[in-house]
Length: 520
Image (tube, rainbow, N blue to C red; front, side, top):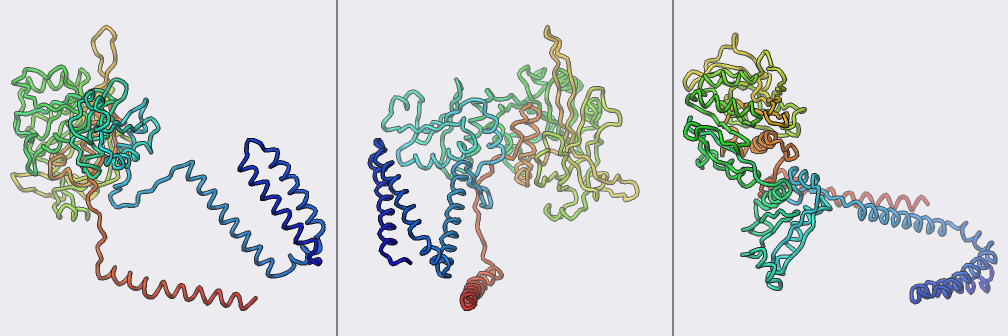
């Protein structure tokens, strides 16, 4: 490699000059002339070194050790380059993946949909103690990840008493949600582990972005399910879910009131057992024809007169008819053939477009389109029983099956009906009535709503009726507890992997490296 007299001095000199240039640039960036001069000198010395030692470098690069070393350096540089590129991508595109069973680190579909639809700034203002800041930061970051329009602020309740007084804060941990001149409060949080934390925050965001709650009247007086019933068949949980969200719920007796109130936006009928009076049907028909929205849940035992009312709107239902389901999914319902498990949904309708899970309808009755659809109406069958189901007769508490005459499935279990109505005002504005008829009310009960996406389906029906299709989604679920059970079989797999497979892989890798080096 020459005689060493010119090789090492010029190489060391060029490296030293290059280092001086970098140090000068770092220490005195405001006077780059020194760094520029030293950089130019570095280039000159380095080129001179290479020119004087061309033969030495040719000899050096012919050596196998040099080639292997260069290969190692190139591989290291490539790995470093890949790491840098990946980090640049991650820094510009924040990608997260929640692999927990219950998705406890990510928001529900509904929350994400609400955030994606924000049109203006929304501020989450947390009134906290210093020790609570990180907890709420972790909570809010799930929301701000999905929308830049969502802002977060932290107010120290000990250092900012004026803000505490202005917002009438009673306890630390309260969150005030603001958008424009609208505000909503989230109180009584039990911390980041509050099972209804996401539900409360998302509902507050919806409240400040969409305005006041919708007025929903729940018809009573005909043996309908009770909103106050906390038992398995009651509707208390539905009432609580509605009132914590977009709706103000009030029971209504048309006979006592004399009419359907003017502020009614949605009317709900849940499994009536006794007859309606003519004036009640007239009030409901007038409500719909004026552009009202109604959810009518019938049962096999509902009064016969209900059929005449529904026929006017293109829905055909026959009393004392039940769905008998015989497909293998009935094992999920304890093998009860009178409790259809639904997997078939209409993918073109807003209510069921995102339906991906099972729903359960205990003792349901078919609801079909009429042969002749009323003019101007659109009727969609939302979901159906399986091809192995039958429409059979209910006689008392028993069913009478006749394979020869019973109508075979799939059988429609719900209809979504809409049609135009003209509002008689100066503007002559064209409105739309909406009616959803479901052949079961049990699916929304305290017990059945826990199954699959029963609760989400019920809420999505109401969102469609309220013409708030942007809220149709899978809603927040309780985080619950996720655990991994170590069974005997799993224990054997773990032992096999750790005691035999892992050491064997390392041993084989070592042998392969040794053989590769011997061949060289």
